[in-house]
Image: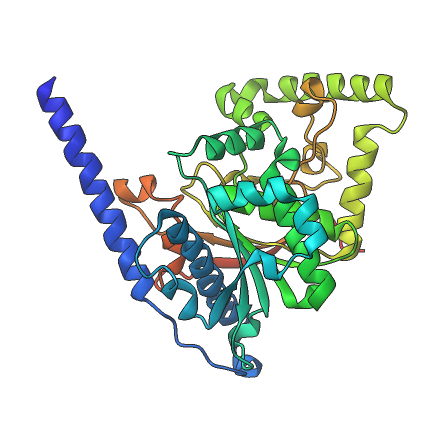
Length: 362
């Protein structure tokens, strides 16, 4: 038993040392920017540059939360400065959302960044909201992750305050100047907020790293044998449809189809960064690469929550995306680190870029 404990501790400290070493290397890896050079850069080069910029902003929020030394260097190297929320929100908004603001001050989930140069590299946006992911030492983070599983993230305080801030930035500067980025939990929140705005034809650019595809339905499908999946789908859809019809005339199916059509007409394309080895997000690959929305209602409607809850809102259902996929880490440590943000800061993993569509563009 003592030997097992010793090897376990060695493995834990060894893993942390490896991760911190890789993270430090990522921080020092500042890409060369070509101001106003977009006219001779191809799309893939611009995507990689944007990936570096927004991943560094999110990492800065992680380190700010952890009170790491010189955390500002994550964003200052990209020519951004952090702006306090008090300078973004009006006094009335600060009063109305004071509880949510206090929640943010306590947990330091996100930051607002302003570009400090008049020559932005790779179409970098003037204003960016960056949202960190989960810290497993925080109960609030674990509760937010549970809300992802049960598709109740729409009612979280974090979602509320992020949406208020993004809407204020859009109102002040126009949606063409505003972007949202996040990792893991932060990606889920950012997707939900940007999806809401896209339904209003307000297309805020979003870059989302390892966005979780881990709602209840997807988790159940991982546990049951594949041969039973069609039966489970039929049961879930049948109960959800019956419940929706009994409770109101405007069924959840109809609402989901309308929203899906609206997002398609608006041509909203969030940027998704997905590691094939990451079990929390890699189901996006199957979601986009197999079938279409016309053939599979699961592409636009998540049935399982409607069996349990009165209302829900899904962040993972949308028709189009710019998908950046990587499959770089082949060794055993790589499988454990597949969900880490730092992987997207490696210059030797350009990944595969593709524009994916679940339905034909109108």
